[in-house]
Length: 139
Picture 1 (cartoon, one colour):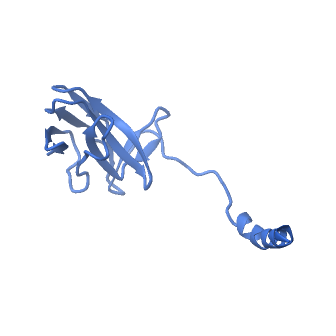
Picture 2: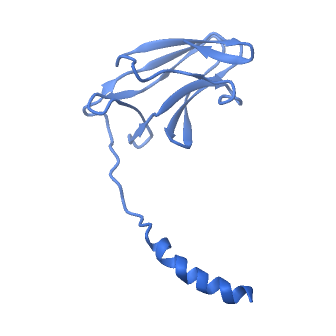
Picture 3: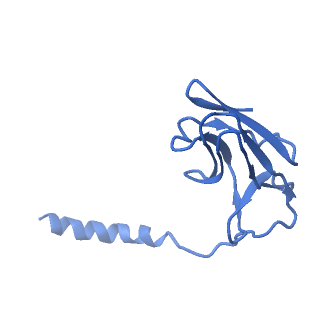
């Protein structure tokens, strides 16, 4: 009985499955037209830190890590036409960075301190991060 109802229901929803079409998209590569905006993270905490960028609404990647008492540089690029920041992957594809945060390695998201990109002037800058009450504070 269940199979008699399953197959007709499957036929009803098949046109919806065909509505999603996968097609190639153009991905911007290189740095032409972009402004270099490197960000140096100074780790003043006594634990190693990991800095991550939200590349999609649900996906993030590690952009840098720094041991205690050291610094790490994140290569970011600013597009003056769109106002977006990007990181480059190994293929030099532009990965738009929606949010950037640093936190303690292994617990980076739960101990994170968000680093503002919007409103920051394009160009090199440094941010110092220190531990406070089990969290990382960057500013």
